[in-house]
Amino acid sequence: MQNEIQVNSATLIGETLKMLEAKMRFATATCLDIGDHFEIIYHFDNGNEMKHLRLSFKDGEEVPSIRALYACARFIESEIVDLFGVKISGVSAGLLLGSDSPVAPMRKSAPAKSEVN
Amino acid sequence: MVKSTITFGPQHPVFPEPIQFILKVVDEKVVLAEPQIGYVHRGIEKAFELNDPKDNIFLAERICGICPAPHTTAYVRGVESLMGIEAPPRAKYIRTIMNELNRIHSHILWAGLLGDAIGFESYFMQTWNYREKVLDAIEKISGHRVTYAMNAIGGVRRDMTNEQLRGLEKTMDYVESSLENIEDVMKDYTIKKRTQGIGILTEEEARRDGAVGPTARASGISQDLRTSGYDAYGDLKFEPVVVNNCDSYGRFAVRWQELKQSIDLIRQCIVKMPSGEILTKSNNPMNGEAISRVEAPRGELFYYIKGNGSKKLERVKVRTPTFANIIPTVTMLSKGCQVADVSVIVLSMDPCISCTER
Amino acid sequence: MPGMLKIIFGNLFKKRATRLYPFEKRAPFENARGSMDFAHMENCIFCNLCAKNCPPKAITVDRANKRNALDPLRCIQCGVCAEACPKKVIEMRGQYNEPCYAKRTHVAAQVVKCAQTPPEQK
Ligand code: SF4
Ligand code: SF4
Image (cartoon, rainbow over all chains, first blue to last red; front, side):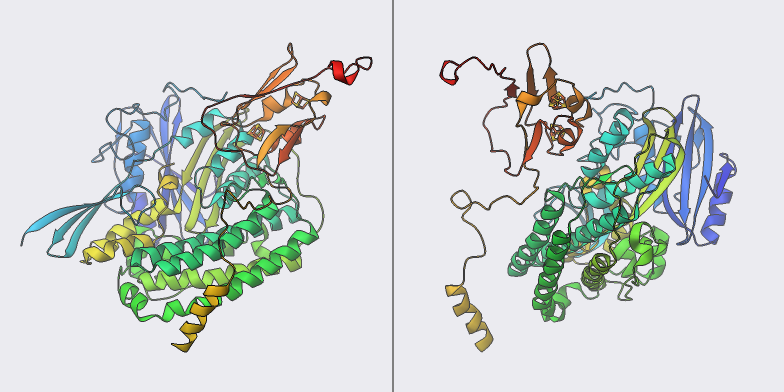
């Protein structure tokens, strides 16, 4: 994608801080399951263009949370934790799913059956 | 100071959909609000990965019952950009008309719900009566009141005849004159008392919390994706509606002016409607990543679509405007509002919960 | 106040704003997608295109018995099948489906027309 910066767990906070200083709005974050690793893309917007931070990490690795910088990341991060079962520090599961729901249903390995196909 | 806890929702008369706010209350004042969602999560994002991309249009339509047009528009625009095709101009105009009709009916619906939350039931009845005419216009064009099924990958499925365009013009005249009938409500003493100064969200807070749509525009942020000129919006003349009230009244005013703006946009579309094809057929593989954003009635609708060249999409992420507006609402609530105003404040951001949780 | 009186007396003599639904029905709009119907089954070639294109997979095509079946509660009235059918067998009717008490499958069988058979013996 255009305007994309690769980050890792160590540089994520620093790059996010730059976005905050540039007065970018945090639009949302998308988590992707790429087989051997996970990616979270953080989308920022300033009204004219979007910028993206792409964080890659291994399964089981704990990544930092950006909700101290952007309060609106709170639900977005909880949703990722719920649906993908990844670890984000200080974020607990239980926003969208309950205790009897399937665990990490959005993973590629999660059993899924399309009812129609 | 005794703090008591009141749970507001998930079943509450003013909310058509389940969302819960746990309010910490001192006397009658709310000092802290904790939102709780997750009652209607349906796993639609997963279903996107399992179904055929063509069938997904109908799935996207069913994410939200109030704004099917923006959802399908965002989805097909994303898939089109993955395929590297573009809809023909006439299709773009028809899409724009559908999106604006959708905005009109959504805003009228919201105005009625606000009247209902305040206790102004005859206003609720009148607005929904006028909305019915808009739904009829939509049904005449698309064949269905709620799920339009107008968009297809590469264009639209149904053309509009000249007769339909004339009929639409008449409906717009009707809607405009009926809105004038009830415009005085904006000047009403009780309405002002219930909305002015209630649910303050300053510009700085709106930026910090990532508010979108009318909620942001009522706080003085000129943020309207239609100005980026997707579909036919590039050819149309309009200015985003921005007011500086920062309160529930401001959000009412923004929506009221947007109604008029939408009527004007539809009229411009009818005049400028180009002729020609309505569908670009393509079998290109879907490869790469695309972000497609559309201004829905409630604000920025965000679709992230990833394809890997195979027949199915690898990931579709949907971020709906209400999801972005929940945190600003918590900010508004936590400023010490009255318990009786909670319903007005939550309603003022126009919550749509089932599309929030997908 | 006088304005209000006008409205009150006006309302006494005005047509009502609502319809008395089950007794008084609005005619469906032209081109409305109320429900789908296998209208011209005699033309069907059992190509399975309608079933393949249907988003919720509400149609089953039974080539051996020359029968098509629709699950009306699955059908979302999208009209894709009508577009996909090469023989224009399927039509979208304006009338919405009636509410029902039981889940039934709507089966449309192809009646083989025979030129020699007189109509009363069919
Ligand atoms: S697409 Fe038409 S012709 Fe083919 S099986 Fe279906 S109804 Fe019959
Ligand atoms: S109208 Fe749509 S859902 Fe119904 S049978 Fe036809 S294709 Fe399937």
